[in-house]
Amino acid sequence: MSGSADQVGLPQDDELQTALSWLDAGRTVARATVVSTWGSSPRPTGSQMIVDSNGNMMGSVSGGCIEGAVVDAAKQTMQSGKPQTLEFGVSDEQAWEVGLACGGTVHVYVEKME
Image (cartoon, rainbow, N blue to C red; front, top):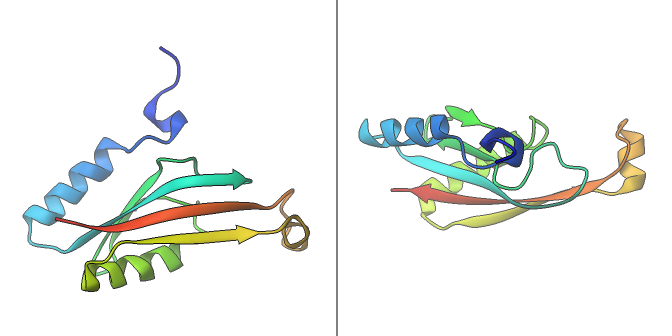
């Protein structure tokens, strides 16, 4: 068998275990999952991040560049209960302006965990 869960972006046991412990402690928790990518993407499909209502987080869906927006969306989803799909992208031309080799698009699905 080739590749570990880290290499292919599968959900990490630590994140899921932490989410379960936060839920058991009575916290409200949301999970964000990279559901598709195109072009340059810092995290592969399947990467996950969990967030609680206090803004605590574990895992990563972007390597930092979009995670603030994902945390805000997670807080909205925890309050409303409505899942949402977020899209983040940068064109090839914009990528050069900020020092990246190429552009890309990432779709992140955010859902409340219960």
